[in-house]
Amino acid sequence: MSESKSIHIAIVGGGIGGVVLAIALSKFPNLTFTIFESRSAFGEIGAGLGFGANSHLAMKLISPLIWKNYKKRASFNGWPEKEDVWFDFTVGEKGEGWEGKRIAEVKMEDGVTQSTCHRAHFLEELVRLLPEGYDVQFNKKLVGVDQSSEKVSLKFADGTESFADAVVGCDGIRSATRGFVYDDPKLVSPRFTGKVAYRGLVPMAKTEAVLGKEKANNRHMYLGHGGHVLTFPVGKGMMMNVVAFADSQSDTWEGEWIQPLQHESMTRDFGHWGESVVKIMELIQGPDVWAIFEHPEVPSFHESRVCLLGDAAHATSPHFGQGAGMALEDAYVLSNLLGSCKSRDEIEKAFDAYDSVRVPRALKVTAMSRKQGELLDMKEEESGDDLEKIASSLNKEVRWIWDADLRAHLKEAVEVFEKSRS
Ligand SMILES: Cc1cc2nc3c(=O)[nH]c(=O)nc-3n(C[C@H](O)[C@H](O)[C@H](O)COP(=O)(O)OP(=O)(O)OC[C@H]3O[C@@H](n4cnc5c(N)ncnc54)[C@H](O)[C@@H]3O)c2cc1C
Image (cartoon, protein in one colour):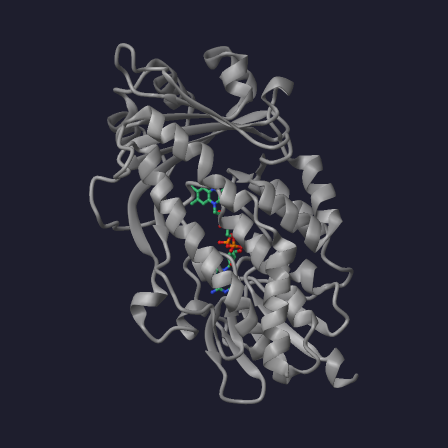
């Protein structure tokens, strides 16, 4: 095998980010990969995921088959007249002349600008697109990385060791790989955002009976002071996904990040809201409560031949629904750069070029998302609970994320890479 055909990448983590990266790398004849996943099989939680135009474009650019398969499982807005509506935003709190007040109907360029999907369905479709005979090792929990030799060594909790030319940590928000990229512990650990999210899936027939067909089948967001609730159809309209964000009782978070059955606290946070929100809360039978964390700003996503992608690199609060979308964009850029490497010696240059475009965009999305959370909870500094100001921001901010020209984004990274080679 010639040098150019022998770059082997270890992908740590077989979630959406890791599997998409594997599909993307498999297009390039100079690259091989192994996925190391800590679980015993590929798997995702039972919850919905939203994608915007930028994420759709990243799917298409990585492989048209991702988009084709995704579309088979995704839900777009239920009603034709709502096809181009991102979300209908109304006031969800109680109060005469306040409850149910229309804030904004944010329109998109066309009906495929936003979609939603059950996470497990998307991962299933992605796994189908891995190349024949792909290399995956389950029950491999990464615990150590050593870059002191020619090959990078990966150590696993079961005592085994493996080697690769480079490592891409796609191991999520609590990434172990991250600990081998940053020396400063403050950069390694995610920080609590002070918000929690109650999440649940409700069968559509039940939802329609309680909320009516329009509210059940289209994307809605109910805003109030200190919280907001969003609902959208998933599973080809068979289920409604609910995510209700509230301020936590404390600035710090103790215990598990995902906890089951929190009816009491959900009632404390939303029981006094308006009729629609109270009905939505009653529909959720076994809501999980998620503590929302995000990563601090970092100067780079790599250290020598160890790089980060997706939540491992830049976990964001989910107020623009962009975490998995950013992982798709990362995979598009990184795979093309690695695919251009003529030898192992160029891997670090490829990682530098990846950093040059991905760090600014991912960190900006994380900061924007934090601000969006405040906006939706009616406590953003400039808009507070002024519905006109909220509407104006809702109509504007998200478009910078959606409208990204990803081809130009990659071109910029390739130019940085080419320059560093000359
Ligand atoms: C409430 C909420 C709502 C969200 N909504 C959206 C949305 O609408 N749209 C959107 O785009 N994003 C959304 N996100 C973000 C999205 O869930 C994440 O960005 C996405 O799942 C990240 O994928 P990933 O592959 O990087 O990480 P993960 O999905 O976390 O996958 C990591 C994988 O690595 C494995 N792993 C972990 N540690 C190790 C180890 N040491 N060794 C080996 N393997 C390991 C795990 O088992 C897992 O399979 C939301 C997040 C939250 C919390």
